[in-house]
Image (cartoon, rainbow, N blue to C red; front, top):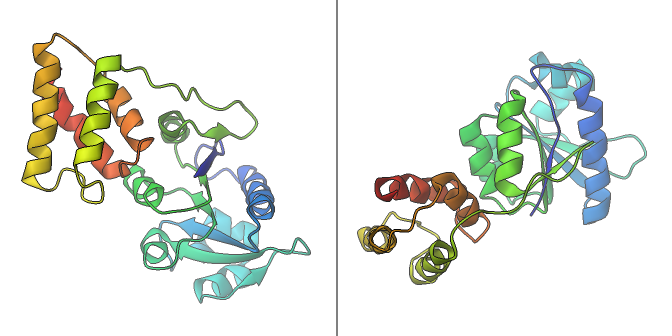
Length: 222
């Protein structure tokens, strides 16, 4: 999945047209004629700064589920909340405004071709970009390297192949496998940064929430 971070702080109207322009560009590159606008709630778009930018009539039509043509770009706009987009076939390109840290994790686990994130607090956007190695619009790609000892990476690769990634550490046997790996690493005197472990996990097939849980579990052994 391609990820793009649009730097932003609070309800900054100047960021919004840039974000939509990036969304149209990514639709063209992905061969999609539909850009999915995703906001925290479905029923209040007309009272947000994004809705003000789009216009009251367009915002209300989007809230009703209408498909709105975006000028003559050959791309149309739809609107979802985080919860409604989870219940539909994942769009190719999602343009996400102002969702929480927990909600962006939910979207990270869907199969977008491209996910564009405009955070409310840019600190959260930077953290997200660093976690995924996302491209920052107007800047460079955030450091995509993961700093883990070789033994930790090898152990985690083995763990990843022997558990059910669709459920993470939900099953007790899978959780025990993880505990055993961490215990062995600690016994060998190997240390690691749990945040780096989380970055490694999300880039190696773990769902965002499960990667967080794996990282949290590992703190007992560091």
